Length: 253
Image (cartoon, rainbow, N blue to C red; front, side, top):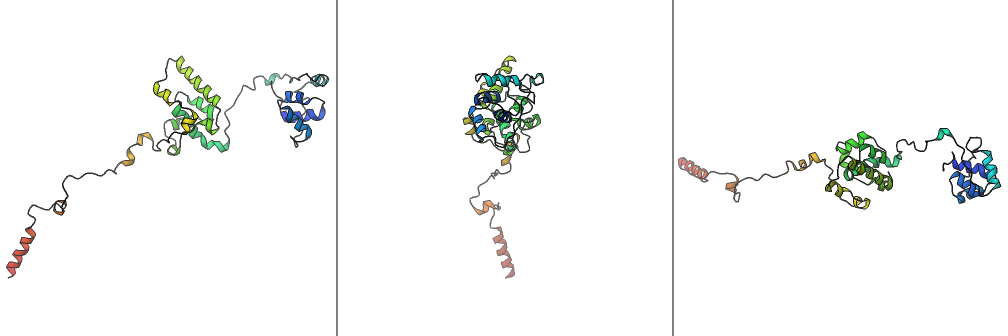
């Protein structure tokens, strides 16, 4: 059942201006009966101004009269042709400011463990743009070295039911296209608990892996350097200098 606009303010008005029971007001406004009782006691919605549903074309006065005469009667919201289909229309998912910094980690997790999801499906799940998804998928994101994959459900960016529905829809689409998921892709499908306990990925992009040790390897120099003469590569006749010194002394004499 559709709820009226400003449900709590509408409940305040109905409590103040009618003799309806708490159950009838709660059913019409989509609230709990104890919450309506709290409004009547002044414990709930103390500073909320009442919102007249009759003046705002949401409730017919005849409905109130019927409900006041019969405690079991449930009031019905006035039909508004302009509001048909409004609940089905959904805009982009809103992400709170405190969680927007976690979106790259969620995108990385979805790209890594659910490669069958399209960019559009990932964008609907975590509320991001296709260029951002593409940059993380291709590992060209400006902060890719610091991003670690984290389950978006654990981050609170989406519900587990929404993630499961998106994965099942992608699997059905692949099956309809005749594409069967490989064993390697099936092994990548892990639960939230398993993904949170996995070791972090290397921070260096894959194309650059192996370059971090470039130039650090020590080159082995052929030869036996067990003594000083072999290390300095002295000539075979190592006593020539001594002989020259003896000749010089003989000439001086």
